[in-house]
Image (cartoon, rainbow, N blue to C red; front, side, top):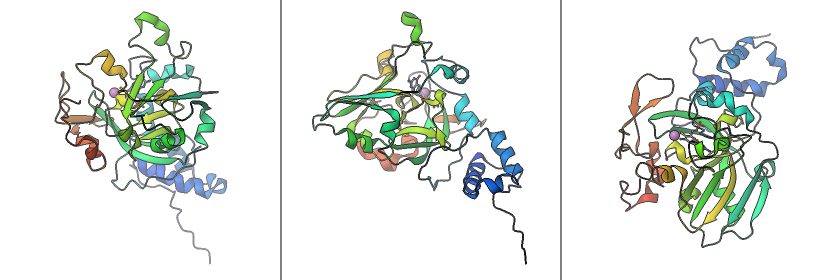
Length: 319
Ligand SMILES: Nc1nc2c(c(=O)[nH]1)N[C@H]1C(S)=C(S)[C@@H](COP(=O)(O)O)O[C@H]1N2
Ligand SMILES: [Mo]
């Protein structure tokens, strides 16, 4: 007897979510090449959603909160990356000048021994995981992204900081040939390099990752290839892109946006619906692709995991 069972990857629903397509694709990839020929519907859906071919190995995130993922197109077509341009739609078409070949990362400051490591060599030391996170920009928009990366805490253990290290500081690459806004010299939008930092206990928190990809494949250039920080309970500007230098310090780093406008941006930048930006409310946010706004959650929905880090601190003062 030959019972023909409909394979799970044959999608019939008219209106599947990107998340469903992505999960189906996982099943589909497991089935291998033989099934490829018969699965036009799946291929069409991949093409429609512009999903990249998976090229990273990682532990999947079970998405127990059932967050609805933004599409690959949304995540990669609306970006803040001032090294290219301040136009969010303008980053993607310009980002091809970012060259991630032979990408070296300098690791220095208060550690046992300073070193320089090639991105690919760094990667070999860590287990990659998928992390499906809410991502909230200080400007009032948000999205849900399936990042791939490794725990910053694992990197910190690898770098062996001295007990005097209290903060970690990150710098984006400076290269006028890759980044047009850096080539504008004194007419640049902001001072480069783009700098960000975390207190070491924030950096060691399990939620904090160094991301090297999204939706199963390497980080798109416009999202900060080859490696960037992701701190999901903080406003997006903390999540510095295209990292070329990581330093351990005993002083709070002066991050780029605080340096540009200390009245409006501080060091902590925790997502907080109760502390307004001087020029707008932070109570609500618009998720990319949806018309209506939704409530912004305390610590972007990660209160249980991170509230203890700020016990006794006045979050209006440490904004
Ligand atoms: N080097 C660098 N990193 C950066 C930025 C930038 O302009 N330059 N913008 C920040 C801001 S304001 C946000 S909201 C996020 C945007 O990340 P995305 O484009 O992947 O959504 O990157 C952050 N990291
Ligand atoms: Mo942002």
